[in-house]
Structure formats: structure tokens, C-alpha cells
Image (cartoon, rainbow, N blue to C red; front, side, top):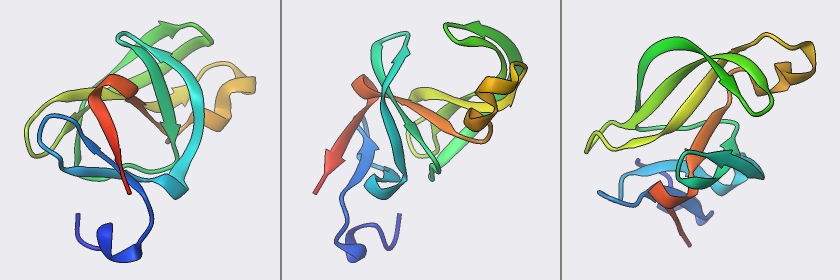
Length: 107
């Protein structure tokens, strides 16, 4: 993504194709869990494609989610929270989960 490296800020890229995905400044939490293990919650993500939305029962409750894929190589990266059914989880709406095993940090 243009501008990522130019900002001088660290960012996260797709481990498979190196496409930039999210700025370090948009990282909200490193304490999430996904299929492959650890996962990070981001405010924004770029260079992704959204899959079909579906309801899922996750560790913290029921959510409407959409899987996210790298727009360059098609690698499954995690998901986007579309809707939280539990009011205490609404802060996740519109946020992105990127699986730690699928990304790497660029300095």
C-alpha cells in the first residue's frame, strides 16, 4: 500500500505475499485467539477482500462476521466483526482480526 513505508511507522504485511495490511498505529490488542493461535485486533485494515457474512459463536459471544482475505494473493487472514449481539462486545464492530501466523511486522 502506498504511503505505508513513507510514513516511517511500522506496519503489518501478509506473510505469504508481503502486501501491506495494517499500520501499527491501528493495532488495538494482541490478546485475541483465532484458529491458528494468537491474533491481533486492528482498527483498520487495507488490501483485503471481505468474504460472505455469517453468524459465528466465538469465545466472547455471538457475532456477525466476514472472513478477510489478502487482495493480492487470496490468503485467508482472519475476519471482520460486522455486528456484536452482546452489548458489551459492540466495541469490536467494524474491527479486524488478523491471525498472527498470517502476518509479519515491517519496521
